[in-house]
Length: 395
Length: 95
Image (cartoon, rainbow over all chains, first blue to last red; front, side, top):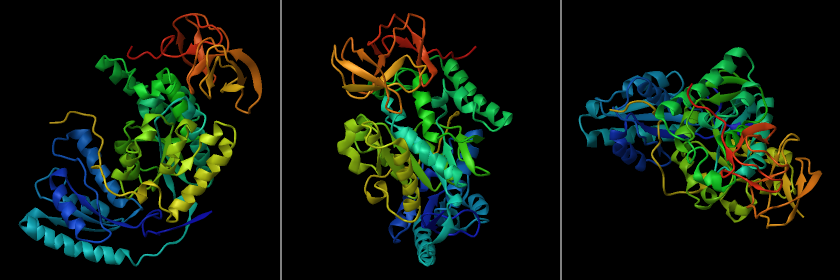
């Protein structure tokens, strides 16, 4: 099976062909934004990295910035730096260069803001014009990596949107693609089920260690997670305990064997289904999946108030280079369906099967990968800063 | 008749697909849409919430997906709303 994508010299094909302006640190977001605003089609990816990060958080930020740069959806990168930051433009350029074209402007080298702006705009215009010559070509579906997250969970999530999304995930894995799902807190109470599908002892133990680590942290924190896991919204939707939420949440990854456990932003090394050790917060998690090379994200939605304020699904538009396919599961929210790409609510009424909706989600992978705009891509306006995940001491 | 879906044959709860009123009879169905039994709702239950398919004793495991989702903190009669007021998580944190 094929899609029409952008072949890359190094690595899998992209489904979009963006030229991005990537600041090395949040302090220089304004310059990056101003440079991008003067060049048609360029996308500024402003983010929250700062020198307050230490050790593992600093190294995660570095890997994430490099991962953003080398994602297949990116044609080329303009780095915008200062010269005094913890991760410099030169360091990032060196790591991105083996994969794709990368340029850098820094305040240190250009002397001041205005000179850096002028140089940045000139370089960026060149990159955008080069990118415009790349055409879509027939690519193997095995090139695709899809990141999956659920949201607005209620009891119906596990009956409609999650199993249909899982079905689509299984179809992609069958065809040689890669699927990543995550949310470590939402493995608690269901870890034995997913561990039972691990391909070997190493993967099984790595998965169980992620959950044990999280449980120890919760114990050390000395709090009751009820109200966060499940959230008040989840409880209103009928979910009673973390076990129940987790058992329903893991359905979104499908039934394929679990071939690996990844760190935040880590690339899957071979085809199949992967679990990423990561947060449940949408924008931080999706960024980790994008940095791991995923070209498409799926947001499997239950329903309730989160489906109604229309804003929540715009979290992922914080990564405008990472198309999101939004699936709505709850028929009680049917009037919101135009804000979603796929409606799975008819499963509840028995009008369609999980298999049928799963197939439409899979077909949507191919359509979106070949250039079809998602609902979120068609929206403009509000955009969030990218949130690079941190879980340690911040200065 | 309104339906409640029982995901696994070993479950003692089912998910109500449409809100039901007190005294309403509900068909408990399997995932392949076969009627397993009819039960009466003891109180009103909102869509997406759980109903006890059998009576569950205090301290007994509440089962959904064929797996434990917690412990009953009270006796739960058949047809009762099963939620945070009568179920507690079994997960232990720390040693």
